[in-house]
Image (cartoon, rainbow over the protein chains, first blue to last red):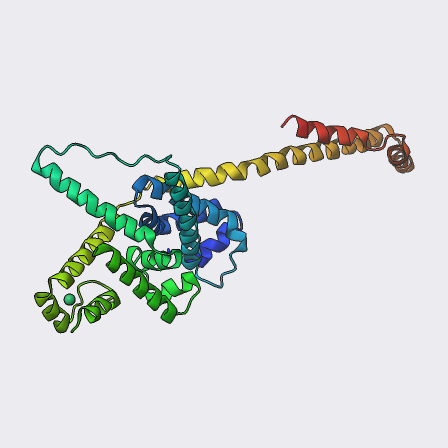
Amino acid sequence: MHTTPTDSDLVQQAQDGRTEAFSVLVDRYRQKVFQTCMGFLHNGDDAEDLTQEVFVKAWNALSSFDGRAAFSTWLYRIAVNKAINKTRKNKLRSFTGIIDEVTESGYADEDAEINLMRREQREQIKSAVNRLKSRQKKAFVLFYYQELSLAEVADVLEMSPKATESLIFRARKRLQGWLSR
Amino acid sequence: MTCNEFNKQLAMLQRSGEMTQEMQEHMDECASCKETYEKEQLLFDFVEEEKALKISPFVTTRIMAQIERVEKPSRMVARPAFVSLLSVVVLILGFFSASLFSGSEASSLADSTEIIATDYFFSANPGSQIEDIWLNSYSYE
Ligand SMILES: [Zn+2]
C-alpha cells in the first residue's frame, strides 16, 4: 500500500540530506509561500524569486528545525520575515529612485480611462497595505492571502490568538481609514 | 447605529459578506459608510485577484538546482581526500605484499614489517609522501 508521507517524515529525510524528500515539501508548499509573498510584493516575478529564496533558506536552516512547531508554521515564519526584509529594501530602493514607477500611458479612449482608474485604485490599495506596520501586515497577509485560521496565524507570529485577532482588527481599521479618504 | 459603530463592526468581520441586518440598514441611509464598504470590497477583490495567481511549477526545479549547487563543493572536496587515502592504503599494502613474496620464512615477514615501520616513523621526514598526496589532491581542485 502506498501512503503519502507526512511533513515530519519528509523533514526527517531532508535533514539526513535527502534532497528528493525536500522537493516533495517544496511542491506541497510553493503555492502557499508564493501567495504570502504576493501579499507583500504585489508582483508575480518578484514573489516567485522570493519564494525561491524562502525555500533555499529553509533548506539551509533545516538542521535547526526541532519540530516544536509544524513544518508549515516554521516555513511561513521564514516567509513573512524574508518578505518584510525585502519590502524594506524595496522601500529604500524606490526612495533612492532606482525603481522607476510605471509611467502612465495615454488614455485616448474610454477603455483606457477606466483602466487608468482601476490602476489608480490598485495603486491606492497596494500602498495602503504597504503602509501597515510589519506585525499588522504579517497578520493581514497570513489571514487573508493565505487563509490561515486565527490559531495558525498566532502560531506563526508566536502570539496568543486573542492578540492576533486584535492585530487583524487594527490592520483592517487602518486600511479602512486610508482607503476611504 | 452610528458611523463609528458601523466602521468598527465592518473591521471586525473576519471574512467579507457577513453583514448584519443593522449594518445593511445603516448603509442604505449613509452614503459615506456605503463608500467605506465599497472600498473594502475593492480591497478584498484585489486580494482575491493577487492570491489567485499561480506560481510556475518549474520553481521546484530551480530551487532544487540552487540547493544542489550549494551542496556540490563539499562532495567534491570529500572525494579526492577519500581517493588519496585509499591510494595510501594500497601503497602500504603493496609494501607488505612485496615482503610477503620476497621473504621465504614467516619470521622474515615479521622482521621486514618492523623495518618498514621503523623506517617510516624514524626517518628524517616522516609521512612526507602522504602529505604530498594530500596537498596535491587539494591544490588541483
Ligand atoms: Zn455611516
